[in-house]
Each structure stands twice: as C-alpha cells, then as structure tokens.
Image 1 (cartoon, chains in turn green, blue):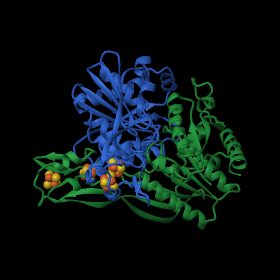
Image 2 (tube, protein in one colour):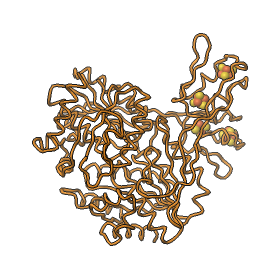
Image 3 (cartoon, rainbow over the protein chains, first blue to last red):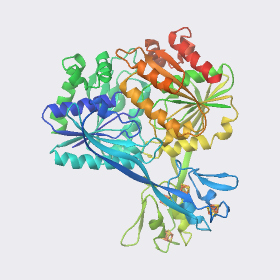
Image 4 (spheres, rainbow over the protein chains, first blue to last red):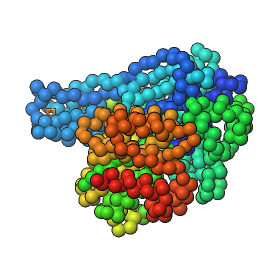
Length: 294
Length: 290
Ligand code: SF4
Ligand code: SF4
Ligand code: SF4
Ligand code: SF4
C-alpha cells in the first residue's frame, strides 16, 4: 500500500509523522520503503538519522528549454507574442530566454519565421536511495536549486521506491509529500491508497488541510488526519476533526523532546521511546496498521 | 521602490510571521505593499486582519475544438508538449485539463483554425488593506491546479506597475528552493532569510544560500534566526554560515507571545511592541530600510 503523509501548510510536523510512521512500521511487523517527495526541501533522510549506506544516485533530466540561434535571428520579435509564460525578454532589440520561466512548449519555435529556436533537455535534479542510520530505506527526490518540474521528479522517485520495495519485499511505501497543493503533491497522491493529513489546531493549517483534502478527493485517495500539537496554547479551533470531515487517527501533544529528537537527528520513537509523545504515536500507528492497512 | 523578499526554505520557520510584522513596521514610515506569493498556502490574511476589497480570477487558456472545422489532422495532438490532447482510434480528440499548461501551441499549429480560445480559472488574486498605508495582494492557487510556479510568475509580472506605487514591497515568498522562490528573489533588493536553529533549518539555509548565488545581481541578505534559544539548538552553526558570507544576523527568541498574537490575528509589533520579539523585528526593519 502507498501511504502519503502531507499537510497543505508547512511546519505542521508532516516529516515528523512520516519518519516515525516509517520507523514504527520497520521496527514492528511491516517492512517499508520511505520516499521523500518534498524535492525542494528534502529532510526525511536527515530526520531518520542521515545516510547509513548509499544505495544509488541517479541524475534526472526532465525539462526542456528553448534556445535561440542568434546567427539566424532577424529580431522580428514574433516569438515574444507567442510565449505565454513571460519566458522571453527583449534586451537591446534581441529576444532572450529566461531559463527558469521557460516551459519548453515550443510556441516560440513554431512562430519563428527564421527557424532559429530549438529545444534542449536540462538536468533538473537527482533521485537517490539510502539506508538511513535508523534502518529505514529512504528514496529521496532532490531538485536542483531553482529547478522546475518537481512533479516529474517525484514520479520518478516513487517508481524507484516501488522497484526497491519489490527487491526488499516491503509491502508498503510511505511518502513524505511536499507542503502545499501544487504539482509535487499531486504527483505524490497519484496512485496512492491512503493520505494522512497532519494538521495543527491553527486556522492556516486547517485551511491548508482543507485545500489538500479537496485534491485528495479528486484523486480518490482515502483521507485520514492526525492532529499534531493539539495542546498548543490558546487554539481557537474547537473541533478540527469536524472542521475537516475526515476520520482523525489520533492527537499528538507538543513536547520539547520532539525538537530534541530533531536536533539529535533521530526519530522520536528511537530517541525517547517511553515518553508521552512516543506512547501516543505508537497508539496511533498501531491503530492505523491494524485497522486501516489490513 | 524597495523590494524585500522574506524567504524561509522549508515551511514553518516563521516566514509569514516575519513578513507581516516587517510590512507593518515599514508601513509606519511609508506606503507599503505586502505580497503573499506563497500561492499554495497563502496565510498572511490569517496573521493580519486586512480587509479584502477586491477578488480577481486568474484565468488561462484552454482549447475548445470546433468539431465542424476540425479535419482530424492530429497536429494539435502531436505538438502538445504536455500530452494533454489524445486522439482516439475513431479520431475523436480527448482533452485533459489537468495536464494542460495553457501554452496555446495547439491553437498555433492547427491548420483549420478549429481551436478556439476557452478560459479556465487557476486561482485568485485578492486585494486588501490594513490601516492607512499598508496594502496587501494575495495570490491563491486553486486546489488541484499543479502549476504554482506560473501563478507566482503572474503575480509578479501582472503587478509590476502596482509595485512601483509603493516605497516598500514586502513579499512573503513560497517555501522550498525551486523556481517559484527564485522568481521572487530575482526581483528583490533585500532578502530576509528566516531560519530556525535545527539541523533541518541549517540544511535548508545552505540550500537557500546556494540559490542566492544563482541570482546575478547584488542582493542585500539578512539572516533572521527565529525561535532562538531552542534546547540543543544550532544557533552557532547558523551564525557561522552567515559570517562566512558576511551577512548580518538578527535573533528572534522563541516566545509564547508569538502564538498569542497569531491567535488574535494581530501583528506582534502592534500588540507587544516592547517584547524582545518585537525589538528583533524592529531591528530587521531598520536594516532593511537602511
Ligand atoms: S521569432 Fe525568431 S527571428 Fe524573430 S526574434 Fe524571435 S527568434 Fe528571432
Ligand atoms: S519554449 Fe515556450 S515557454 Fe519557452 S520561451 Fe518558447 S514559448 Fe516561452
Ligand atoms: S494549450 Fe498547450 S498544453 Fe494545453 S492542450 Fe493546447 S498545446 Fe496542449
Ligand atoms: S490541429 Fe486542428 S484540425 Fe488538426 S486535429 Fe487538431 S483541431 Fe483538428
């Protein structure tokens, strides 16, 4: 089964839940491969202790860009009108491609009367696989800074994770999705079975989660929620479960050991296995594995 | 006009919190515009009780194929860069809106003028204000639309003229390190990098500083260490990163007042101007405008 942990808004503890879920499944009965799909800020491997053993690393070239042959260009600027993405700009009468904005659609190439625009393929990131120090295999999508097309990258990372899970006879894949609701998240949800939305009791987090749940519904992924930091001071949300309209697997209290585990680069379940927060996590994960996954 | 990008790498570092308070402080000097470019999750309006006065739909192209004119030549399908058009064996053409980028290539290549211009909504621009001298523009992506980068580009490109009307433009930047963030940072004069003293915060800061190296123009960069004083925190490492590059560092301590002001939906610099947190923010505003 593919389980996606996502949050809509960043900073709610999505990676915290994903890392500990993967660690829990690994140490209990269910072999698992974890995927970090937050290609712009991947930190799942770090949260699981960093790399213990590197399995592989593959460059990914996923996007096309336009380039102009200035020997042929007559500076007619027809290309400029064709570009819908603000990717062409005129400097001293000449058109220039702004690489970051270019979608590689070739509209400029089609209209260019001098036939001087061509497309090239650009490397945009890497997919790597490691066994983390806490023993969980992790596949990471890592986008080049300033890169685009992280959806494609996520898709490739997930394919690698499936290949790895077959090799390791792992039945489940846990995906730590990017924050937000855009391309990488949609790619994370594509083909997934279950979504765990991590929310905290604040209005922006609830609103982010609602937007995420709309996407999940479109993509027919079964949604659940986990309420993190539910005892935050002066929360104004009375009943987040009702607000969201999905089953809440459980509530996780806030405790400074969570931050300490982060700083020490260990999943909380390994860092403070007998603490109050770990106890709650185990209850939630146990229920999840027994009632949802089976 | 001075453009200030407030960036935070991963989510949850306090980027929006700094952006809102900074905008509030700058607006006491001169006309200020707060731009929420975190289009997948705009939250400035949760932190600032601004009054929304206008909402505009952001639309883009979608093809409407006129069956009567279409000669079934298949050129649109062949040239569509997103594979959003598919021709079935019976020559019917299927369109997948989710995949379409709105590039208009199908319309350009159609020899029979059978592709007409349709429109679809990708998101909203919201316009509001708070007090006399602070205005707000929010870009909000519609759920299920994957193309957040382009929404950000449009938010900037379509408001260039508006930006010029303000002395300060504070942009709450998108998280991550991708093209969305880059397009915001490229427009800025000053970048306020908000980080937190954890291994992930440090990791992210390094990634962000690499991104800044890609921007050719000279930027003034200020590092804000938020939640300063976390147990076992990496304040020293963050400061070292900054001093390697000669960046000024401002510490903002962790405080319950931050959460409280959030819950009250008021900038902390208004509610608790004497707090250590507000003093840190005042220092950020001073460096930004100096
Ligand atoms: S359309 Fe072609 S020839 Fe005309 S300005 Fe653009 S690149 Fe040059
Ligand atoms: S390929 Fe498309 S996006 Fe790139 S410059 Fe040409 S028209 Fe613009
Ligand atoms: S607008 Fe572009 S992406 Fe959309 S269907 Fe036409 S060619 Fe394909
Ligand atoms: S290019 Fe025009 S005529 Fe040809 S199949 Fe497409 S819509 Fe029909």
